[in-house]
Image 1 (cartoon, rainbow, N blue to C red):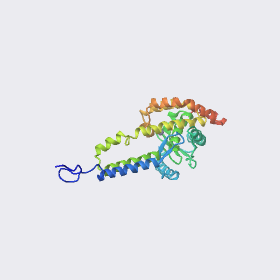
Image 2: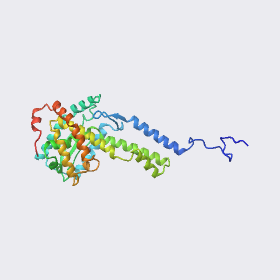
Image 3: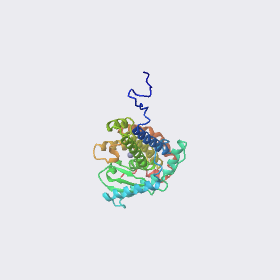
Image 4: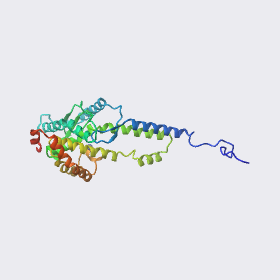
Length: 307
Ligand SMILES: [Zn+2]
């Protein structure tokens, strides 16, 4: 007897394709939403010319509010030094010089990428507090709140070294690396929810995610680090600091890293050798920026002050 190919030998209609597998539909729906989220929130960073993922629902005010909240929490646990002390005044002075050059440096970098500056940080209220701590660390939060730990002072050695680190931190805030991490976290959550709802085995899930780099923050964080190095270096050079101090500074930081350096510089940072090579390759451009934007004679003189 001839069999109808659409019938199984038992007379039941054969399941055709995957069309009716509800789990697969769920996975496809999550994947489609994930792709939609990804493509509708992609934007080009004027500082690097690279496409980045920043959730459009996170605006400047929201980021500032989050930054301020984090700042207040940190300050409650830390001991600020006397704001009138010499070191606090010196560090405020360095911060002020760097912040003054943000617009010019953003404009110049954007132009190199055929873009216009977006002045995302125009309403940031920049402020720096020096905190008493052994850590060789510093940070800048969205909204412009910064801190320098006193443990960084002997590693920085001079105003140029301090400007390298502070420029790097300011660059993280300018390029919205926090918002980028939040957006990526959202995407990862979607992927995990989709896989769980679709009944994908946890082991398989992890294998797929790591194959696509979804769960590995490391290369991603390293990209942020090297772009913060680049933008920070241009900023410090434009503010009349000496970019040649960047390599020795990171060498001292690397020597310190075996000891008690802070969390910002411990784990996610690139290997000292690759960081130093990258910075060396940027020096000619940094000197160009210094030539072009360091026009204030008194700042030029103040350059290499030691602590
Ligand atoms: Zn960093």
